[in-house]
Image (cartoon, rainbow, N blue to C red):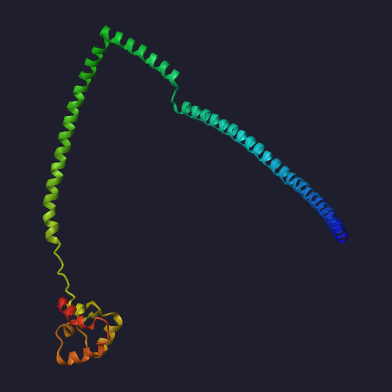
Length: 240
């Protein structure tokens, strides 16, 4: 009897647990369904503005592209009209006008050929050749006169040239050797400040640097710290 009582109590507990489990699972399912519904609503709320925005962007792009194409075609037509007007003003005709000009030129050439066959133009050529002969003779005489005057002027120039050459004597070139030797800055490496100090020390000529005496060597030793001092003598010898 005790076993049956225990078994019945266990069954009751199991049933109670199953009921609670089913209850909680149904609540969880309800919560999940509510969450999914809210997610769907949020997704729709987000997607609708995005879809609308994309649609507006596509419409705007199509509208702007159409406007751009229309404006481009209008500008191209204006450019062609302006080009044609400019060519007309400059005298460049179109193909039809060129054909008409060519036909007119052909007609004119046919008429000129007919006139040449009549023999009127050769007489005119003879007359022009007869008129041109005196002109050529005059031109030859004028050329001979100009050649004579040019020869005379050249002869007079050659006669006057020796007199002028004799009158002007070349001036003797001045040789500033003394001044040049006193310019110590001509020696490579000696600047104006160093040159002034050397003159104060008694070195007043480039020769004293090129071929220094014992006294000059002692004076030059005071400038041994100057950059390039070892080459002063060689550079000075190049100038002497």
